[in-house]
Image 1 (cartoon, rainbow, N blue to C red):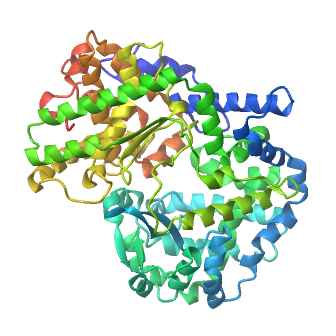
Image 2: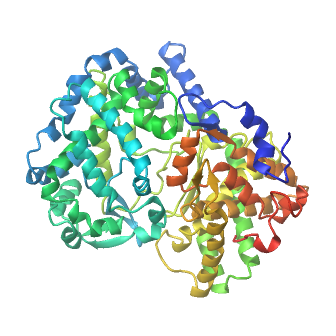
Image 3: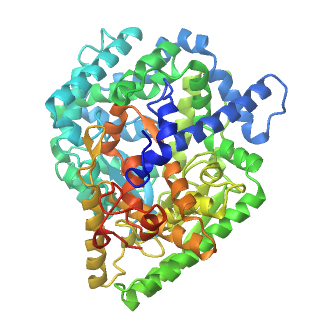
Length: 628
């Protein structure tokens, strides 16, 4: 029986596709975004194959990538040397004898590319984004989120799967005898972290994660850690300031980062770093090391060796490959057309500010200042960071040795940015990535070339379809500048209260309604967290609202085509485990809900599809949410 648009819009638009779609065995989901990713990867692999057969000259941007692919694709050599390679890699960690010894060496270990209990990074100061500062975060957990540890049965099942995988890895790599206790130690340390770290939901309010202090004050929070020494080792000077990310964790970090926990810390360090490099060893080891991740997401099979070899090589040259992709496949006409759409939507947004009656003149004026300062990047970067252009492959060294060197170079470059002005020309994702983003630090939006294709955008699609596709994505990213997080940052990306108190209180009332609209809805048996997903849901509402206004302003808009293409963007078919996992950690609502819950808030949707009271897609006018 055919689903009516009025009862379940997402299903009516995508139902036939969902019924026929097959989830590939090597991933837990398929659909709009994922199919485009697969198509781009196939094309890049086709070009690589032609290059390796001598049928095509190697483009300059792909030369080192092709060299690395020869190493990633030599599976016999990778397997032959893996035991020796991994013991050599783990040697500095195996040699640690005491807490004091670890504290002496932690800075050097980080510089060498190892993960440690400290998670120092360089990022703009949220209240002075013209300067890069040191930040400290907490380590990742074995389970997806702190909330995953509360369901005892689920926790034990997942940790048992993880433990079995690690045990098999240790046996395969001849590390089982000396690593008898490492698994238990790693689990014990992980539990210490899980009991104190903040959840994904708690961390989703970015403005709450800014805790600047002197290094001396931070040192008092972790008295057993040689914090000042480690940070000085990393930046080459004595820093005075550090910004704590997960404040509640660091208030109790002294209970975790302590001498009595050294054995557990050492076991955790060894296992954590082993798992980070296991994928660069032989193929059997790579497949084994992915066992837990596949169980978590419901993925049926490991990625085939040839695809894994491509992805591993690509990971270290993604920006160069992306630039080549953009220059090769993204024409100037499409770039100009999309840039014009961006400017049109910015103007639409500016006009909408004037129509919002709950904004005071003062807040409205400042919102326009932020909007007009919005930076826009479309297609691909004209220039890449110097260290990426200089990255070379040593074909006489092993794959893991090259990976270690790349890691050292990246770490050195990363910490060299401390105290300097951030480079706003850098792109946070490669141009062949099917995605887009807003940077609150830089107040700019970025649309890589890869997303600028059907169904998002196509010169052959109607204006209404393109506005329902890439138009809603562009306006979604613009809305992030004014969502529950973005609204707290000014036109320069600084964390600052620029609203009147009355206006912001009104804004929070409206966003609370968005939380309520999504909270507790079902997703494959899991419950959607309305607070975790609120920023993205606000951005979806604003994106559809502004793009719809732009489509209508163009004259003879096809409202049905607009909404149908919007629903097409989000079509997907996923394994239940994957959907349940995302409900725990993803800031985006499930695809079906971000379609259906969003569109029913629009009068134009109701009128175009003749939705009546009693229909599944009906929402009473007084309950419809309009923010931007």
